[in-house]
Image (cartoon, rainbow over all chains, first blue to last red; front, side, top):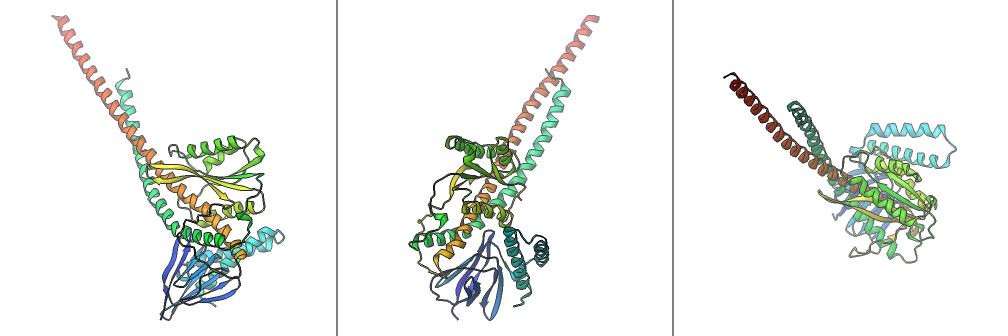
Length: 135
Length: 286
């Protein structure tokens, strides 16, 4: 089967690099699946999971936003934070989730904090779902 | 002339000092290694994001984004990256001097600019000067990761977006090699010199459109520039400290050599004097 090179890159270094058969992920405009030979595209990503299909197996990577750059033979995901499902620190994500939920209860009115808090919560939940692979 | 005991005490204290500086040199060397590695692992991300940003910003015609356009400058922001601790030779003072001189030559009043300080030394200096330090972050880890400074980068970029600043400069020490670091200033925002040096610009399909992508991409790009500068600065900090500590160790060894020389001389003088006294005493008895 035809493959393409995929790299997930964060400021702290590359997280994943390999040849895969299919990339599917959630962009801001909706679910996006990419096969080799796709036209060059750029799309911003939601906080969510990236699924990379390779030899019948699927690798899950949790990404916190960022964007996706597609070329016919190469896909690059540039995110500010990304982890492979097995590298996720579940404990830490759980703590982050609890913290965010607590803050959400306490200060509902402050607009900016609320938004940031919501993002933090979504990142934590995303990490947990990817770690447990509940889709 | 100092007594034998004084010199001996001085030798032993200098020796202890040289042990300390030697140890500091070694820890800095280890940190420097990792700092350089961190800076290297950031390169692929930076290159990629630069390439994509450049091809979108220059490729898509008629794209207007606040971060790409000049506006009349009422207030300037300066990001200054220094270290938290001293003992790194001229590392901090070089950066601070450059910023200080620039500000002196560019601005008449303190209302025209504000400082964002990363690192304790810089912050303390500018607070003491009475400058407006709007944001600061101290106590960063020696190997910072992106999450550590996410808050400061996003609020800095946010301050440009909401027109608190009309332009933003960053000053830091650029790592050239283990023995050479140079102070660098960069205009961070508005993004003007999106280098079109990258050989081939790909034309992309935009999902959904170029504006919305720039909305996500440009802040991320600006934030990465700050993070890149921080990594660069950390690598130079450790290199500078390593060099400073090596010089200190060398100087201590030189001092020890000189002290040992005068110690031996003083000892010899004392012996000679004793002999002379004995000989003199014996001669007096005859």
